[in-house]
Image (cartoon, rainbow, N blue to C red):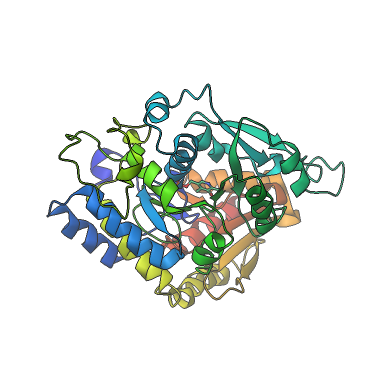
Length: 399
Ligand SMILES: *Cc1c(COP(=O)(O)O)cnc(C)c1O
């Protein structure tokens, strides 16, 4: 019996990939070893975060960095840092932000549920542009002048959600923001691989960039990275770390925290509930080293074989199979399963039946409206792959 079954929680087959809802990415053995070793010793969390900052900065090319409790927490801390800087009174009042700049300008088409993390710090989002392509009312995307036209007294910065298809181009937005001395926060939580993005996105000139630690990096599910300018990382660290010390004894590492900028000792900040443990920090650092060094690339061959197992077994069904091999040499392949006539209803039904089976199987559900289920090989082994195919064959034989 697994530790989960002892709790009465059934094991599932996660053919979705790194999604949070189903437990995230598999941690490599070296990451788990680091977690266990890290748990056996005690260190100053400030010093550990300073060391992490140096290590992460080496991978991202930024001035400094912080291990956060996920990319969402990184976004909350980023917004808090920019709104308060090193002002103790402002830090203390968050999420109350009346009386100073608290608006982040964001393209309407880049909004998602994740921007709640920025609003949680007390920020207000100001939307610009339209979403004319989704509404089928036009061909244009958001344009940089629209951000500029929205800048006012209350503007604290720009929030940009990066993807391969995001518009307007990030560097254009940053150049415009620079002209107004406004910082730019980039949500790049899921934009790895390619690992070149670890450097390329910060190199665009963004002030702060958030990455997930529990997606393709394969660190603990509850970790993330905030990297960027030292000034903002210092303000973010101050609002996350435990502050219960005597000011005259407190000697934070200068690489991480700019004590010179403080005229007193902050209390626990808005990020105190977003804490990260020493074990999580070292585990994330090991995972980041592995990811950045390309250690996961060789798994693609085996991942493809797992998908091929499913394709072979589904030959005799009416499901149309297509393996997609990303061209970046780093991303895992995926398998698209198209139901007959690409009927969305049938795709939803198959997805539901797989979830209701024993064991429950969760497949990628982002394209059910196109009649397609997507299998991600990251969190399944060969037996799981066989089980996925067996279940689909069994379900198909009933229709
Ligand atoms: C996954 C994701 C997040 C949240 O990341 P966590 O590390 O789970 O907190 C934020 N923004 C985007 C765009 C994401 O895809």
